[in-house]
Length: 391
Image (cartoon, rainbow, N blue to C red):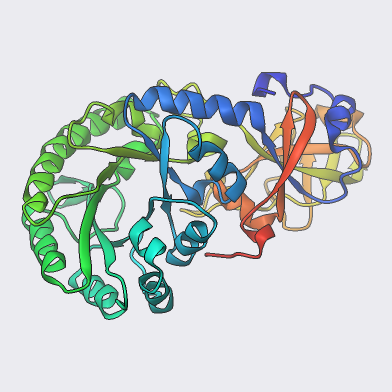
């Protein structure tokens, strides 16, 4: 069921296998999800895609893709999550963000399989010392997160994350890791947030992206060469959904990271050259009708992280033409919507919403309902449905 094939009237929505839904329910269009996976693999060329788990947060979907050609390994967002995934059979997990979870670090070091399969991210000497202090029976693998922002004079364009900005910074930290007992230098990560995470909304944005990519290609090559002097690297990770096709030919990159494109939330609607389809929705029933052209959904106020604003709130995908009231917006326990489509709607009819960011939606639901060609073909627990909350 592609976006264009979604039911076109409230009556048809009820026949999509979701009749009787009384509270908000997460829905994954499995056909669109798998089509997005194929599109992303094609854009990545010969490089494998490391799945960004925070953009999915459904173990069953992660595992399904890991068995397909073109996908290999996971980019986790939590140390505890990484250990949990490995305990369930997932292999080659890189924790994308530094951790101060000493208990999990110690648990990984006590588990031979986990220690061999998980790499922890660092960008400060303090991170290195913290990880080293947790080492027990087995050594811990460490990767270095390199700042990828574009510097234009005093201005930094990109994410504020790593303190490793220069080739010299990277080599100093690599030397520290390599000389620290119990640690193994395993990889490098380069996340180009200002390219992969920014919509192509103007010629200025496109110009910024071209300049950033050229700068990064030079820096990445020099950093890899310098760090490799201190140990053989298992991986050099880069990219995101929005930059797969732009990094596929970089000879020093071994795998590309991506995840959001699989769900294609609203923040991914404005990218050049990406033939992706909305695949993740939540449906909420109509519980009030205070006027002929107004319906009230049970809920809908699932705002996404990032700067507050209209781009971070869910949007109505179906029926088309419904819009929230400016003075109320989308609400935690009710969302009033106005539009001509409301006139034909009744209590219990479903409103389909799209979330602004990908995996964050799954923190609201215990399971996702899988739809294929308008029919329910299965259900999978989210991380929350498996009793896990990794932040």
